[in-house]
Image 1 (cartoon, rainbow, N blue to C red):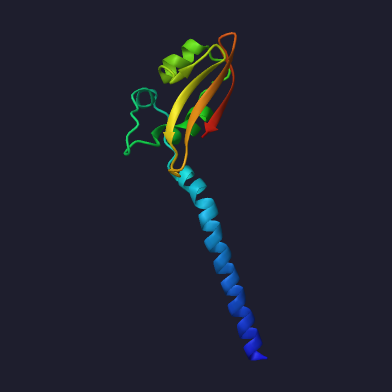
Image 2: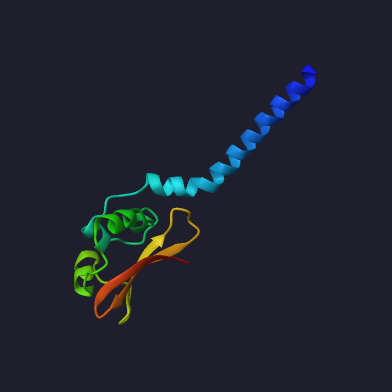
Length: 127
């Protein structure tokens, strides 16, 4: 009977350890993104260069940008004053390249949707 209890405890510890191991790999990219959030700085954003050392700088600033600035309602001129020239532009959107994500498996862009020259929506595009 003691052996069965001991095996049950060891099995439970193994299962908990395995679940912890899996959870670490599932959630570590999100935790890494959270830990590396950086306060938005307009000059750093505008002067960013896509190098290995600063590849994810714009990704790290995106949360602060979208949280602390009311992008919706801004004119395209106000956005360009804040973020600099977009990497892509049309009548209906401004697109800012974000570089490589911290996961090092994808890139992305901040896409600002325009109507009548004003931002009506924004999204982060992964790809």
